[in-house]
Image (tube, rainbow, N blue to C red):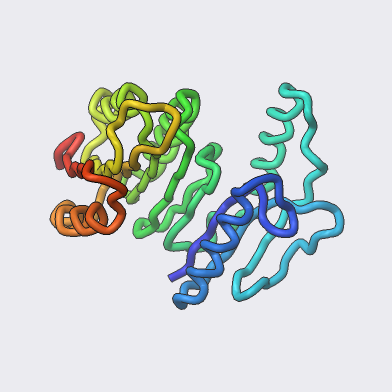
Length: 234
């Protein structure tokens, strides 16, 4: 299996926790025998290509990001354009993961067995950004499998996102959620969910067996819930 992780930071470029998370994930996947590539940005002194601890790192050289908000938006767009020009996403990867949850137009594989994965932080504008990105990707690759992970804080944040798939008549959308706390506080992570578009056959049965076990091992108190449901049928 070949996997490509796209992240705007990766060692030695570290702005926060994302770079460390992607590094640990990449190195773990590599230790499991997966061929892992990371597409990221680098400063003028970073190598354009190198192998670090079993992970192949590809970098586009970008200047330091500006502090002005408007200039930062233009900087992000330029960085995404430069990443797309590397054409790595056309190189036959089985899995593509956009680690910051904001894949731009064109950042999708054409391999019908691929699995784009999106992770984000459950801010309202991020739900909307994922909807836009998914619309573009699904129009180009309707038979692809998609996995969208999201944290659960307040239920009123996640319900519109789930209803969006039904409203836009996206077929074969499965939703799985695991809650360790009631979904009524924005001050903590209460659980998480994943939306899977075009999931493998009978995958919902596997989730029904797995989630109770996870709930039992991860429980922090007496509360615990899990849900598996089709947002839109096959």
